[in-house]
Image 1 (cartoon, rainbow, N blue to C red):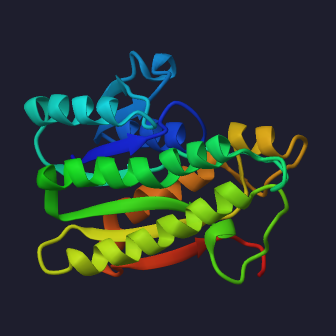
Image 2 (image 1 turned 180 degrees about the horizontal axis):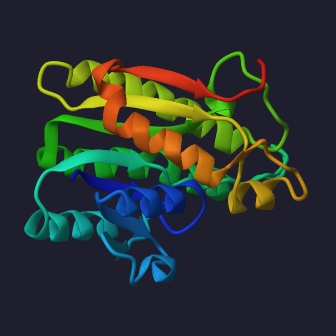
Length: 224
């Protein structure tokens, strides 16, 4: 049994990861603003946390330290997406996306590192939109650029902790059929379901650090 910490755990890929990992006998600490979908599931320990509010992240970290042992896999999955033309998006909206997709990842990771298993794995869920040379879409200036920042943060942390552990990697996901995708692109049908992607994420979270550190792996069947 391994201990997972998963953010954005109440829907989409995060929910599927939490469900499947728990069903496989792992212990899952699940973070989301809305924890109702997570309640009553064996092996899932839900915490209501708004990652955009640093004080809530700090409070959560203190609670976990007193209740759980070492964390084996930290999956920074929570994301914020605003689809709006660049000339119309406000500074506060741009900052809101970065608070969840970059700043909260940095804060939570920094607070949880003392509790991470040295052989463990910090897995950041990025996007193909944050990978240089990939297809880009109008309206996603805040989202895709924040996911690009997450990619660089992953590489930097892997270098900084390469002697002591844990390992750091990022998965740059292509289109996955989730609520967030439907909200951003109504009617679009992705080639991969959240459940299918969750299987890949769990396996990589458990085993990817044996082969990779500081790497960003595109997980998409489309090109470029």
